[in-house]
Image (cartoon, rainbow, N blue to C red; front, side, top):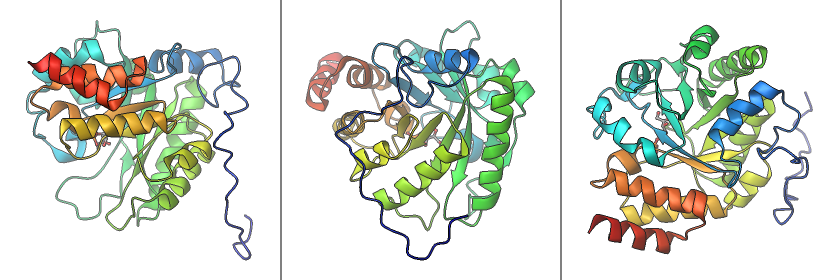
Length: 292
Ligand code: 5RP
């Protein structure tokens, strides 16, 4: 391990230069992976736009019945046409999502917290690789707490899943978790996303922040942006637009879709931004037309 003395501040992100090792496969950092890994990633990321709309409904793994997800069996199927990837727990998928759907699956495999915990940073790998294979998962999602008390155990979880994923060619999605003492700054997100990517994941999920372009430039795999708490729809569309403009290869939104009074139209509007180059203003106009 390099010593920490005399560390120079990283500053040369060359945000104006595209990622170099990307031809011919369309997913960032995946060029040297095997066929199976690439197939799963192509299931998630559209080869034309290079992006994905992940619909996150895995909140129940620690929040229980979440507002807007009281009836997964009703909510998920109606949104299916507008999303590319289902981000859920094995329990939600097996009980509430028809298997004949043709969507990619981001399987939540870590757990161990609940809303009753003050510190959510201590999780385990709950879903083994055999069940991820049974579920035909296109990636396995692991919560990773950098800078929190559970850092070591969450990185151990992450690497266990990465190791199994390489054995069976299933990508890993490293989820940047913002512990209660964490700061939602580019300094924190650059550290967390880069550590997770250096561990060997194929996708990183994080939050939008200032200087987001530098976070993206420093991360050698695609970043998808979580929506976070519910915002007014126009603000959520601006968040999605800024994320894509900043170099994210998609969004992984939950509450800003399923807690909207117009969830279907919201998923349609987000899709316009992610895959069709709509600005937030154009998507907002689309959304307003769609709901009236
Ligand atoms: C919940 C998660 C969600 O997948 C992630 O936060 C995206 O959902 P939202 O847009 O509602 O934040 O990790 O634990």
